[in-house]
Image (cartoon, rainbow, N blue to C red; front, top):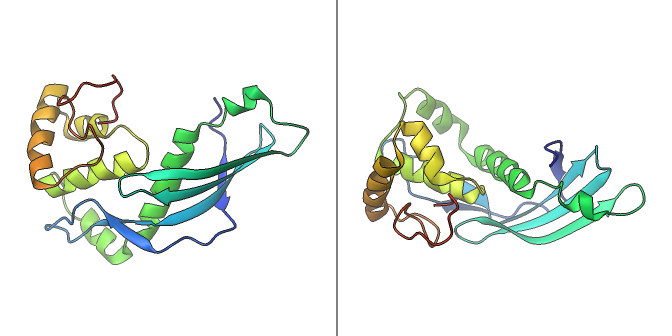
Length: 181
């Protein structure tokens, strides 16, 4: 897989911002993401350009349309395996969510010691879920928790701040073995 790609604004303008996840009462912050957006993804090593049109489903930024164009001759099946779409979506979401944050509030929040309240952890979980990541693994790493400890705390947090996904709490439902929730 190639991790070498560049993002550029797509032909459509980003849609209005929508909040997602809880409001953190300690910092007054909540995350926002455009309702819809389009981006061009340039893969110089593959000589490909991909356009993705995305829409926020209420839980995750989903790809609504994907167009792949070769800048040389054709798109080979090998090229398709090199697109690294989860990494692309991760970068797109990270960029648009951070750009949407109010700079003054963001600076204020960085002055706080390592936030670890339930609302902040719920926001962290939501952010990682929205950007196609592994929310439980991020929480475990951030807090230094074991899987069992993270499961225990995330169940409690889910009662206060509902978390996204059909398997939003680790360990509650063991369908499929991935670490998405």
